[in-house]
Length: 497
Ligand SMILES: Cc1cc2nc3c(=O)[nH]c(=O)nc-3n(C[C@H](O)[C@H](O)[C@H](O)COP(=O)(O)OP(=O)(O)OC[C@H]3O[C@@H](n4cnc5c(N)ncnc54)[C@H](O)[C@@H]3O)c2cc1C
Image (cartoon, rainbow, N blue to C red):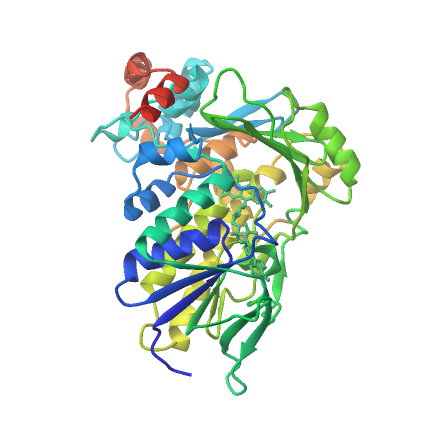
């Protein structure tokens, strides 16, 4: 089948469906027709509220006004994730979106910190030189417009998943995306090629198209149920396979960061929104029953609950092929990495953008499909390694769950990274890894890896100059804080616009 692609059918109206529809319509809308089919009877997964900074590129590309977006999705700003009890119980650290310190003459800042610690025997910390960390701790927020990377403060958002889907739907419908309500009961395929030709709905209505985007969530009704591409399971590295989510009343003060609080067989999230907090427990079904998980979550909630609990089961891993025949899976249908680093919505954005780059307007080219699948696989694996790092490098002794994770054999790609860093703090970004050096640095150090040595470039700064340089840099990093309003004040004034 090598037909021109004139009509794209998006199956599913969760975050994946609407981001895919918006991206395709905005960038290719003159050339293609976009129809989205969703079923209110099934609904969406109902979670997915924390994001990472590239979402701002998506909003900009779509022409979304930030104040409208914040107001209508009840969003807040996110500077970091605070990891509590991950290294040991009682210990915490931040993975911020910023970067600690500043590089001097090719020397990454953490080497200078190591040198200063050794020379002056003082507890210099990389986080004291990170504006995102300082603002997160102080509960402050503002948009810092600067050309100077040293005082940049990158951010993302927390938002209400249901309101976000509605917001995107309105945006898409204004652009000309057609929405069809209905439950898909049957999928028709071409007898020879196996390509999907149309979807038959419960109502009897039929939706045909040339290219199908499977955004049906964990059901994966096109890529898995119909085309059966198979799944690579990563449960042996990431054993959490369930979650229970429950919203509560909001806190008095809205924190500009997500909290990820480890427990004896998983962790709990706390996502602050304008109108409520999102909470959930991610856990291993081998260690907790649903009742026990709910009891555990309830015992750690500080505010009144607002809804019944939402129990979710998942399998960590990825579809063996994200694109097969004329189906491309986007979102939970393509695989799932647990929400520890809020990467799923980013994977949606990234897959939709990749599809635009490789759009098969003149028919599906197997080489392009192979390239798409190769890039998606690498992206999934790099994020997987970063998430495993949090679990594997731990010093917790209170449960078998953490001991097993510490002792497990991790992917060679991750072992290599850990060993390079442990030896002398070396960090290398590989092939477009989503997480840059400052992210790996913060999580490696936060989880307790202390490099044995620093890079010799750090010796280029005379020891007598080092304390003054550190002092100056601390001043530079702290200075913008004095001008920032509180996070709540900032949201309030933005929402009035
Ligand atoms: C516990 C948990 C926490 C998470 N937290 C985060 C987070 O903080 N940050 C983040 O980035 N991501 C997070 N995620 C992931 C995030 O929720 C998803 O990536 C995002 O919501 C996209 O989901 P989706 O659109 O792929 O699927 P869904 O939301 O499940 O949507 C599926 C759609 O397909 C439709 N559908 C299915 N079957 C049919 C059918 N037969 N006929 C018609 N329509 C059908 C449904 O009606 C629905 O519209 C989390 C996930 C889980 C499980």
